[in-house]
Amino acid sequence: MSYNLKELNIHNSKLITLRKMNKQELQVVALKNGTVIDHIPTDKLFTVVNLLGLQNSDSNITIGNNFESKKLGKKGIIKVADRFFSDEEISRLSVVAPNVKLNIIRNYEVVEKKEVIMPDVVKGIIKCGNPKCITNNEPMTTIFHVVDKTSGLLKCHYCEKEQNKETLKLQ
Image 1: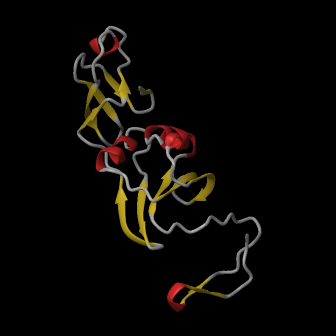
Image 2 (image 1 turned 60 degrees about the vertical axis):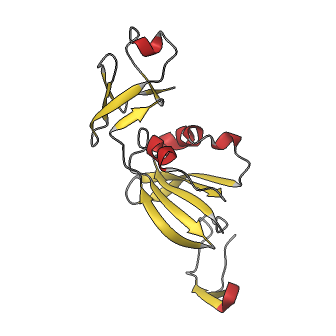
Image 3 (image 1 turned 90 degrees about the vertical axis):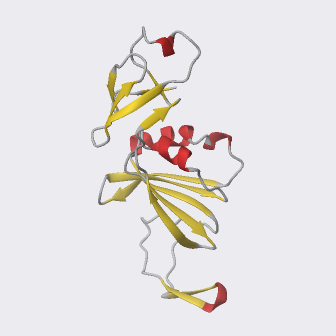
């Protein structure tokens, strides 16, 4: 939906100036309360959905892909109504999408911005690439130590096999 209006009157007589929108732009409904996950690489969008368990959520969720981005060229975005993620949930994203930005929305306003930062230790998210690793042969939680956050190099706690974030297999 596009608007030809120069101004739109919103709650409490606030005026917001809208730029004239052309028909190619997609308009998404504003989020009253919840979280916007932005700057998701397009090839990782549905991995992020799975990591956060959004496919099982009762919340209203808007998923957009292939939006223009100055940083990424193309990006994905997820809006989740009435849901705020824990630091642990957010850190899980760092394994697949380390430069994701989160915007916390309350009463239609961005009240907090968070940047996803890879933790020093990642537990229960990644499958070890070593078939002889104990985690692949016994029922136990995987643990990886982050060797290099910039390149996404991780090392298995048990067998010490190093894996790059590009070749990781999620559990």
